Length: 161
Length: 173
Image (cartoon, rainbow over all chains, first blue to last red; front, side, top):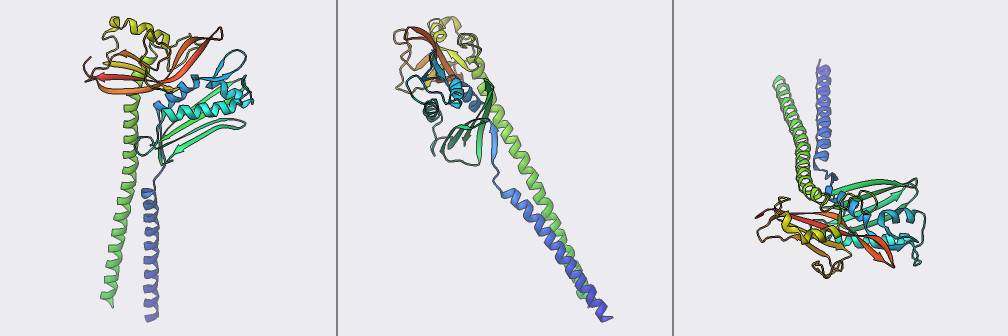
């Protein structure tokens, strides 16, 4: 009789411990979700306008007809085009875009924008990757896709706040 | 012995109640955080969108936009030759846009601020279309391409720079 009572008591304690463990795991799970700083992206109209505007910018890379816009230079860079003055189109694209982004998005502790990333890719390769400042959890971003001569290019700009 | 068992049962029940309450509180906090974060994001987005739409609407209006002048329709593109013509006739547009001030500043290529006039155009980087009064209220800006037709090596070419259009509204108009 005493043995049966002891066994019942042990079972109750085991059951109680299991319930406590399950509850602790569930609480930990929600705590992790609650405290975790998730990366939040917001589609930005300013960033989108920035991409649209810089695509029209006329660079100093010339072909036989004209000075090329950034939009045209992206596809020329994909084809490893050399400008009339002998410079590589990708180098011109890189230096022009670096200048544009540095002047347009001032970064630092005193500015609302803490950092930025600009990425231009085609199906074949990554043409441009520019990064500056602190890459935080929250950012405003814009993406633009366009096609020319069967080549698809994608531009992604992220401004970290 | 029976008393001890009852105490244990009561303790067990108390722990369970505390755990269940904590669980629901955390679940509530979790969902509240998500819903408030979404609310804040959409409020910020709508605010930004409204301000920028006002500027974009202006930049894409016939008096400002490039339209078909630079090979196809371009969005957020301003014809600076048009702006110079508009600047000389700005009195005819008094109160037309319902804003208190409009300026365009070239961002790239960068340089010292030089206001555009008929004598120095296009060697300038600041177009004051509607002069901004001192109590002009809120200013909103957006990126635009500032394009013009230029003669280079005896051939006519399109030339676009990167600029920001600044629109002030809410003050004395």
